[in-house]
Image 1: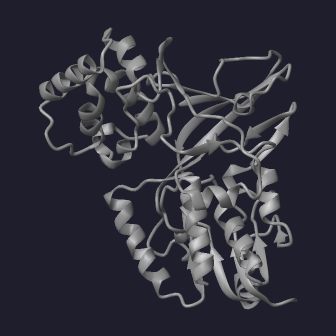
Image 2: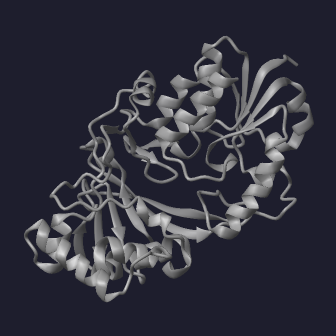
Length: 365
């Protein structure tokens, strides 16, 4: 079999960006993908003329001009701006938390009134240095919003009480004392016209890709084919779980075609009460301002990861972070293998950070 400069395990966004850059630099590259499609979790499939995000909503956003100029080489992006809605037992609130949210919750009309209300609730809770997610959320938005719009959704998503989750998880949550409904405060954002799969196909043009191929079925043979290996799968799987498995949250989707043009009027609606079993409903056509006569929705159910499930979100608590560091110590001693991406680095990555990391790594190689 042919010999390659680089073998890349995984045809997701990290693997595709690395493969594209390395091929551009004159390297020979082989990509192996366990699934039957490229794109990893950004994979989209057309249903009823609608690009359906098969592994959950992916909205591209970045302030990194270098990444934006890079990714727009492979797709035209529309002007979609993420403005989710929170549904608490039939009450609808704006996400991110902003003046519309505060007005609906408390009847306040000025930023000063909203800030005073939050400060009063924070003081009543006696929080000075937030020690967990619950305390961090109350310090950011007050007790009322925490109880209605944060607690139930977060505990469904992570499968743990908010008091047991680290504070940093909620620090990314945008809170604005304006009427700005944009969730991401990013200079560049949108959805690739025609879907992410078409974009990744262009990134992988001229690169040999083998689908339905499990690297671990013939690991030694594959390793022998290349001078360097870029591995984007779970780092604990690479070492055969020698220290035990890392924990992830997984997601299950129920996707349905509906014979109506508009189901919920928005691409993303979060269900923030604890009783509703799913975390959110995605209506895919709204990502591309679709006018198709039918619509496609996906209900998302969060679950604890089990072997055989798709891992989505690393559980970066103290226990798992310490376990990852043990695997990282093994990885650091590898002369031939580079670990990258969300699973390879056990890190929650936004898409722009995935691309930036992959390009930097490829340039170093």
